[in-house]
Length: 193
Length: 171
Image (cartoon, rainbow over all chains, first blue to last red; front, side, top):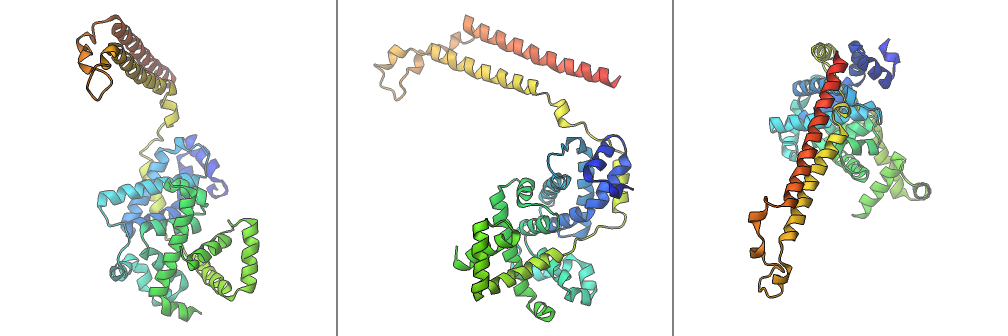
């Protein structure tokens, strides 16, 4: 019933006291939010905890959403700030990992991917694994652009940067992803052709 | 920026659909005539398709239920635009500007400009001539303090009026 309503209709319902309507928004955006959180935390348990925190924060601040931007853009702004705060608290290393360590970390990232050899060979798993090897800035911008359906202007707004800087970051992220794939998945790419 | 980077940047802009009409025409022409550009385009398109087909990660099955259980204990906070009164912000701004302007005017009033001509100091004024003891013992300072007290009372009145209004609304 809630799935037929658009974001603004669901928000209006929530603001007028129908708390259950918020489940519609959570269902719609949980995968986007979780994926973005995972890009930052590199750990499923932490990503789940952070995602939950993000939706709770968004609910508390829902009256501040003025509808001047897309709800997703507003929500991703909360994702960005919450993840940065989380990383600061955990004092995690957020910058690029050196290449020797990349495989160790990537291997421990997603046990689901390791569990299935066939899946590991697949193109999708390979892309996800390559993205997880990138630094959080690059992985975040790629996820926002390709999966979060955000334009460069919207990404700029979420990250608090200029649109031109967002464009440069996106180009840089794609180049680095290509390099990672060529370095670590050359055999798999050959098999797929 | 090397040649390859420029080619890639131009091709990415073309793929993203943000190239200008003229640039688009130029790139289409290059793609039909230049084998190097064509190969690079196919290479980038492969990355583009992979990224488009990448999948989102999913949280646990109980995720929505967990969030809903948490928010059941909470209430939506009132919009910040409702409780931040712009007049109060302006009043605070006016208060500080008045303080600063008052001190500057008073400071200049204390300077003995005539003494500066025969002074050997780097500053064009003789700071020893400034009489700080009179700072809080003259008509101008008293008037300035009075304005600040009035502004302070005005701010307090606005704050209490807002509180009273909110209380009535709740009743």
